[in-house]
Image (cartoon, rainbow, N blue to C red; front, side, top):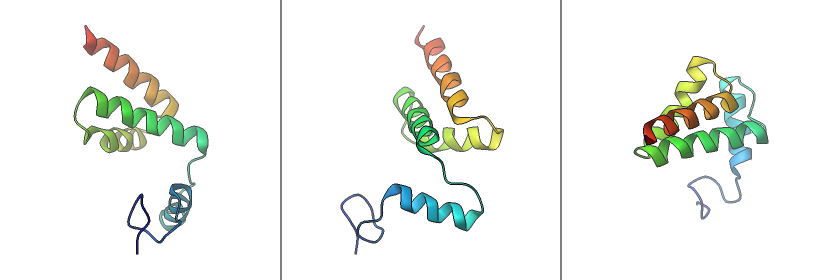
Length: 84
């Protein structure tokens, strides 16, 4: 069975899923501030190009070890530089 927002068990929130996945990969789950920065980073990437750029930009920031808030700021500067 799935809920209206995904294919997980009914009532599973994003925060619950992320906490469980964090345990599986041995990493801390993001707090609300980090989650917000990542969602905004994903939004900046998706709105300035194709939607596929959203998760990949977040992955790139993680691989580079760039804090999500800093990655968001850099993405915003990049988007502004492309606007002309």
